[in-house]
Length: 521
Picture 1: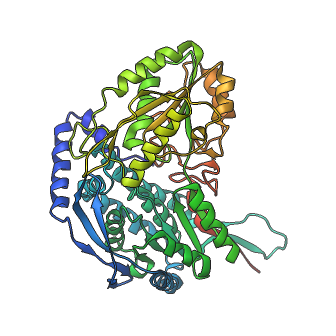
Picture 2: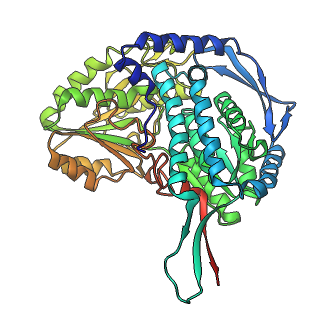
């Protein structure tokens, strides 16, 4: 049976039921607003623990709103969670893969039932607009259904070998789990990315300790509750809230951690990996951001190119690993492209993401706001010109900035090589496609990339020569963004990733498994 994606908003629009979609989301907002300010425990198996020190999480929509009170665990408590996961592993590793598939499908159905509550939670947590929040829940549901299908198609990764050396020899290849995994998730996709890493480990027979971003811990808490209600053992899924440095101490010292999965900055990921494998070689699944580029040739449909670049650069305020941050445009269409992109950016609705007309909500926190200011100032000091945007919307209770397009930044600037993670895109003219591709590849990252050209030969040249794990041609809904499970497996090359097996793809689950060859006579 072919895999079918959830795609809620598109379906409602196609069926002429868009108002129903908005009504359901409003109901989700109301439910979440009634829960604001609650306290949430650490979850170690069946135990609910509270600590003396707390983490008060406020909404970037309005910092006077307390989203929740969470516990502040130290490294000893994180180690206790790992120990709990290790004890649970002895039983969970030998569970029937068919049971794991059943629990996963049940969880997908529960996520579907809670769709608008979860989407509204994301909106309150990180300021994502409603269509993107619902799309994130859809992505999460897709991960669950897709991984269940992959495990079933591979019969739990047990394969009888056909070769024989001796007449009475029987060989079987069995993929086996490692043990307890530490799952360290980011703020920008607090449900979907937490889910793909945690489920990748769980469905293959590993146990997990989930450590969410301190900015967005509530989505992960609700995900753990869903998994447990679906049948996954409580001891196999542990949840801790703690600062990043406490987790670093555990990775540096605790041999009970069998593997870790991390999505975040390259600098943090590389540092964690070095200390982790220095203690003992162990597996890691890393997604470490990107410096994603779009190419626009003279053979492009400029309407598509402008819309795709706009959505790729400014969707969720550029706070995506896959966000478009560099655009290389052939000289023949450079000025016209800039004129159209400025006109499109000028129409942006900036404000409260709870409002249905908003396209750009707030940045995640004050530190992100200051980064935005710093990068704009740097561009101007180096001779760059702000084509549109560049300003902070002064408001003491939120973090609103304008979508920003900058030209004429010298190519010697570090801005061309640094992941910004704010809504700033640099645009440069190029002589031809060959020069554009060379510049696309001239970074340490290799996550996503896009091209706009109606010439099939140019698209094929781009695909053959670009160094990125996810590539698009003529993608109007986001030139470098929007990968979905079962459609575009998501992962990076070079410094953007590690395993070469992309999330939401047919090989991802293998990252959490190791092969055992079994032979009987």
